[in-house]
Amino acid sequence: MQAFVDSICAAIAAASGRPAAEIRLESPKNPNQGDLAFPCFALAKAQRAAPPAIAAALAPRVAAALSGITCTPTGPYLNFRIERAALAREILGEIESRADAFGTSRAGEGKTIVVDYGSPNIAKPMHVGHLRSTILGMALVRLHRALGYRTVGINHIGDWGAQFGGLVVALRRWRGEVDLANEPVMGLLALYQRSKAAIDEQGPSYDASFAKEARDAYRELESGVDGEVRAQWRWVTQVSLAAFAKTFARLGVTHDLVRGESWFETHLAPTIARVQAAGIAELSQGALVVMLGEVDKGLKETPCLLRQSDGTTLYATRDLAAVFDRWKEFEFERCLYVVGGEQKLHFRQLKAVLKRMHLEWEPRVEHVDFGLLLGPGRVKIASRRGEVLVLDDLLDEVVAAARERVREKNPDLPNLEAIAEQVGIGALVFNDLKRERIKDVIFDKDDLTSFEGETGPYVMYTHARSCSILRKAAAMGAGRPAGPAGVEPDWRAIENASAILLQLGRFPAVVRGAAAKAEPSELAQYLLGLCREYNTWLADRSNKVLGEAPATMAARLALVRGVRIAIGNGLRLLGLAAPEEM
Ligand code: ARG
Image 1 (cartoon, helix red, strand yellow):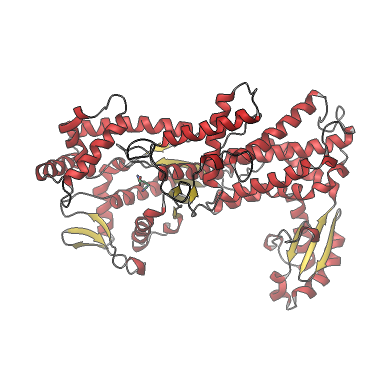
Image 2 (image 1 turned 90 degrees about the horizontal axis):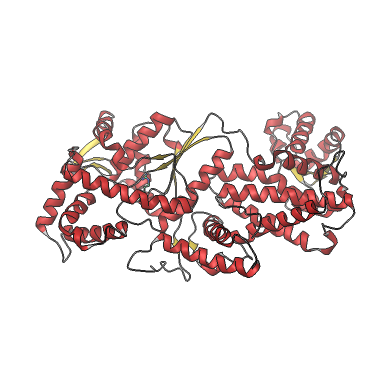
């Protein structure tokens, strides 16, 4: 597709005297008008003429410079239509030759993207917010990686803070009362909640001696002494990470670095010193703060707290240390924080501190926020046991629903279990990515595992169906690429599929756009549109693929292969599997 775009841009450049790099083509709103369009508004100023007059004057000269592409002036636009056989040959040829790499590029080479995602808190199970962060973040890593960027996926676990003083004391006092052997994270959560109640001055379970012991324990932890407190904390970290690892593995998620808040322990004093040296830290009721109103009016009343009056540090202090570190180590093009909307204020404050420090890379720090994951009826997803929703329970549930769907569709599938896991997880992932991330997502396991509608299984099934057509063709010895052993395709056989071809041609641009906007939904929506168009085409009896004349079959099989490759690559970029049979 790029080849057509390039030659059209070159022709317009030659005819108008503008540099080709400045010429932007679009897809006409009405596909009957053409495959590509050039809005002449962009030239109106330089040429001091009305866009329709420019279009009319340019058209004959542009047309003369092109072959196999017609150029028609329509109002303020130049519309281009590519000769059908050339369109098919070019697009399907490109896909075939690039195969798994179709959609990738080297645009980002030499640049680094840091993505902070998942990032759960120790001593608690991951919750649905972490699930969304994990899925979105991993997709953003994959999209950028496909564009040649170096990506650094970071799991910034929450493993530091005053709450762990309380947890250590709870372990001292009550460890015998919970089952830490079989379900350590659930046991730790119970202790964590109990300790929180004990240090809550306002609450009915407040216990002054517990609270004092908890404060002492946290102070000991922060002081760096390697004693009992630190040993307990270390153990809690290990069991929690082991539990998270299982969930991440099921979701196909990996991180390059696990650098939790505690990693920055020795960076906190230097971080505070650096902010002080910038002359923007001030004392307020014993605490050290940075006032932010002058760079962000909305933050006038909410300064960033760097150090409490008792000398301990905060979440913000550690994020500041982390971002300094990330910049120093990676000099990132972008540093994305995939964290739910409830932390908007926190990241706005973080950026405002960087602004007050006049760090020119501040705009590269982006909070990629997202909406909630809710149950049907927009209610909080109910827990299957106890008070907290365990993510693995949710995953089991979708996989069970997917198993039924797959069994219904294909009762003889040999590896049902493995496919059910792929389809279930894929359904969950796609459901999370298919809408603009800022919107809330509804988790309805029957809906999202359906093979019809806007679902992951629908896209996966379209891929598997194409694989099946290609397998049958191979068994018949048909559909080999053109050449001495193959058949020259008769492109007229897919003349009515130009909308699909044009959509296939857009795939690389969709991948670029989704990465740039940190919006994987653009790729998910694209895949849904492609599948709809293609399934409609396949369902039309006059487009029968198998059992036709060899040249007809060759053209239609090339289309099926092209679609299969684009869908497969798209699914994998989003973090779904693309099984060949389901
Ligand atoms: N642990 C935090 C939470 O669960 C998320 C951390 C996000 N990353 C960051 N650098 N603050 O809410």
